[in-house]
Amino acid sequence: MLNPDGLVVFVKRACPACSLIEPVMQGVAKAMPAFQVVSQDDPNFPARVANVVDDRELDRSWLNNIEFTPTLIRFQGGRETERVVGWDREGWRRLTGFAGLGEGLPAFQPG
Image (cartoon, rainbow, N blue to C red; front, side):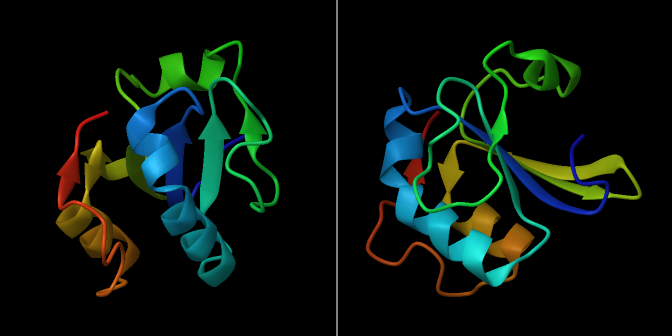
């Protein structure tokens, strides 16, 4: 089950944008207990993130209408309130509340 309140990101190791932002996901996971990662192809990706949800069957991705990775979604009360598709530094900063997130990375990288 996905977090009913918090941020969930859908990723896969084979996605270049997901690999690019692996350090970002690690930092957010460390700072936000309600952050959850759903991995479509490798339950060990990203490294050093606890409790990655294994979605190799793509059930959760299908239920959440995931077409591209990474996709970051904010849930409140079990309902989606906002999403950012791809690596969009300003969008990720807005959803996470971390003003300095992704310094040194491109401003945008499609999924």
